[in-house]
Length: 485
Image (cartoon, rainbow, N blue to C red; front, side):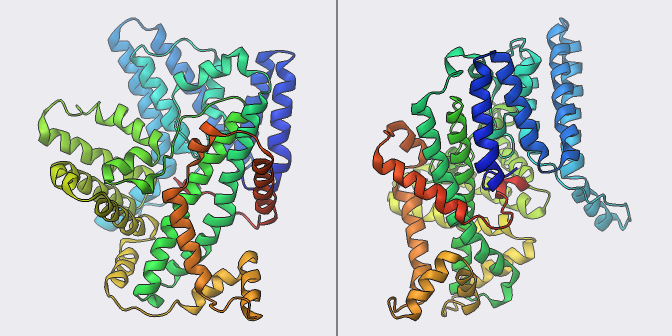
């Protein structure tokens, strides 16, 4: 189920909130069962056939945890850990990477193994990583003996189930057990609705608008001169930011409606002055996972500089592959890893550069590498990058403008242009880019807004306008970009 859908906004969310707090008056356990059941419905709405995957995954991992806790001998505990890791990674590999692996084997060795063309189950990367962290912590003796209901809710809690944040058991399970969170808190509810409205508007009104034009650009690479290649590059930079940021805002807001605080996952990453700083701000819980369970496990910085840099490079390589089964993601992760090493090696040089120049270098690098992230192939990405550096400037492609004209808000603006109220028909495209750049750089992010939020008439009106405008703008199925990862 999508956050940006009629059924979610008008039925699922109010029904879940109402049922949860009413049932809590009868029994906290019944309230949790209701929330678990609704979370599973939320997941099954996409494809009921994949409901069994998450249910079996939850049951198997909970059983592995019980076996690890019950085993006194370290060798036996390590055996159960190994079985759990192999099972989790194996399922993830089968659904996400099997075809990619077989396709490359066929190309390299001229074989003809059959590919399965599997549909990737939503959220499998997220709930698998979440359970991997739980199992590893269990092996380390850091997990209390939770009840099955608490564990199942920890894994399937719907606001963060599909696209994160990747939460730790210690962050969530105690909140589900906290009696003070079982009653409606109107301050949290108002904050949550505000955060949800901002996230919904980011997704529906802005990210999807940019997405339409980005799709046109990547489907018409040969038509891109430098001007239009730069625009398409910037449009995707804003699309993925607003799409993922919008999801994080909505997840945070929904969590607050239930009095549950989710960890911050997005902290204005385009303000970053270095690529190291960028990865402290973008998908923060994924970075945390890789640092704790991959980087430190490999030895972290305990074995000298060369080993440290190798470990960092491995983390970025794995991070790239985590995002998708395509060589474009592998290359994207590797390039980020290399630039991260360069930043660390020459940190004194970067520190001596004016912050504005550092920002420009970082933002430019992120923009260019997003091209590999979005492209269907490395060859397609190279063609777009070549267009960027060809320095063959021209006007904005009319077909690009037409993609904007198909959006209701831009139809209205175009009407004003036709009637002479606006004299520059292409100017609002540049205005949209300028507005988006100012928004991601200079305005408070939603977490900062939540910290100082006070309900007022103005805030209430703005929230209502954003929600109604977004609902009116729902059209077709527009999944979040991170649903694909």
